[in-house]
Image (cartoon, rainbow, N blue to C red; front, side, top):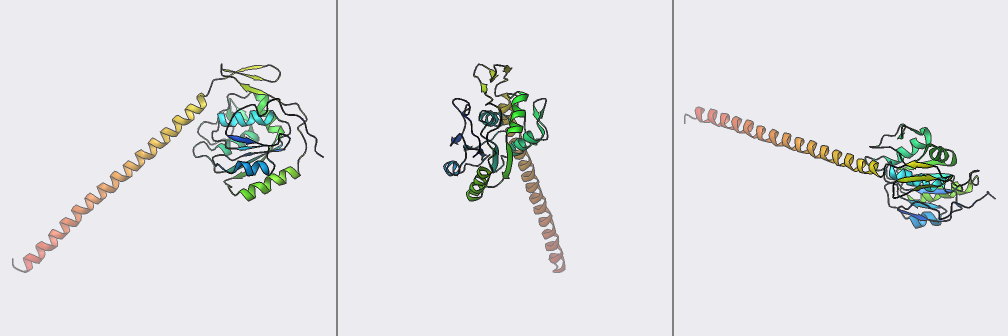
Length: 242
């Protein structure tokens, strides 16, 4: 039987939109932008299941909860990718490439910065879990089958104690041994919203430009047709001697 340990007291430490199951399970399911039946995913054997929508704050919270529980060895990414944020892509690249100057290397999302996690927490995440890519899959039966497959391959708890990262309201973040790291707040999340608004404005501008072009084309077409009609009518009247 796979070796199991106790997660950090009060696990999961960070609040979010997820449901919690058996803390001794080896699987966490992130449904990205899709609201799936979390209860069924938990019943299938997931330790935690829920959405993860942003490529910065959302990922930080998920990572913090994972490394606080050494029993978690698999992270299933499923559900619809989040437009603009590309959260699934960011998680895959965080695990594969890590970060450089707080930016997730290779991530394609709007603002893929994880400023609230110390480097040792990111490295722990990369070592502790295996990513199971099912991005775009919303079929519950397929996801449940993958959960059970992971459970059957449970390698046991990661051989290091829980690593606790606490994001405090007063603007500081602490790690298990008491090291303190500065937190710039949720600026990254706000910037992400601003980027989304900018994208929407550009889309509206392009739509207006297209509409104006269509209108201009119709107007021009009307006058061309009218002119040709008058020309034909003039020729007919001339031939008739009118």
